Image 1 (cartoon, rainbow, N blue to C red):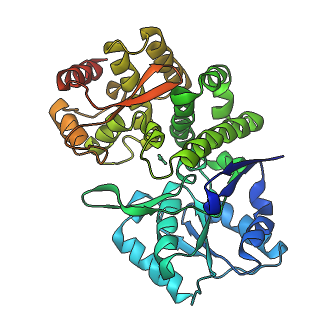
Image 2 (image 1 turned 180 degrees about the horizontal axis):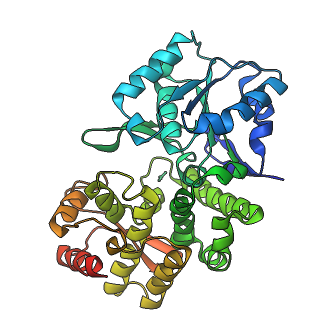
Length: 370
Ligand code: GLY
């Protein structure tokens, strides 16, 4: 069964297809977009052995050839200028025309750099996302944020550039390491926490099924998450309003990631889980949100096995001043003020810029002890 979620953006609208086993029929879906022209697949060295043969077979079955796939090195380090230059060289070296289509097969790194390459190749060619991680299926493949990292920070060079189609095959999550499933789950829970209280309650009941691989539960979680993101992006593509709510947990989380060098010590989704708990705790301390709601957010994330405090990450000597320094450099800082995504209740997030620095410091100090 395939669920279709529509991202409504006028002439740039597109479908997100969610289903179990979609990769095997991706060829026909891609052909419908490319008009049978051969796409160029971009993937990475870890995803290629797992999923590339199925995608190539489905293209062949649909009667379309594919240019030689481009296989990038796996890992966040690939999202830099040097690899972008190599990627552009490989794309242009295949003698493309404006009618060419890139297909990004992989997680967030592949999707982000391929989307960016599509946005600048010949001033813009089509691209299709086939996300193969939970995090990319529910977040990064949807909404058109593309880009690379620079020495100044993550995603500081990029574009808003929407794909023509997203194919989220939930069966591909079957080969994902459990830690990465959990990290992606933090972004699933985020939609419940920012605007879908009933979905959060569903996750409290069914979250372990999503994590353990129950196919119907996974499909439901991915579909609801994509619908939530599609609604937000459809209303605010370039983040001048509600799209900022998707940054719940990211201000604290980004500082934690920066302090651990964006390494495997702390995955992005793990940092977001801790950051969301801190955002709810801050909301409760400010008297904006019932403490019972903050406790529920923490209890659920902890119950599924996510870290909920910096103290849950072993072997890191956290430093409050360093974390505050990273927060002040966040790209969401405006006129020197940090924008926090806070909550009035579970499922009711909003942004606030006037949060007293002492309160943030006190929260960080306490969280390091927790
Ligand atoms: N990942 C947040 C956004 O797409 O806006």
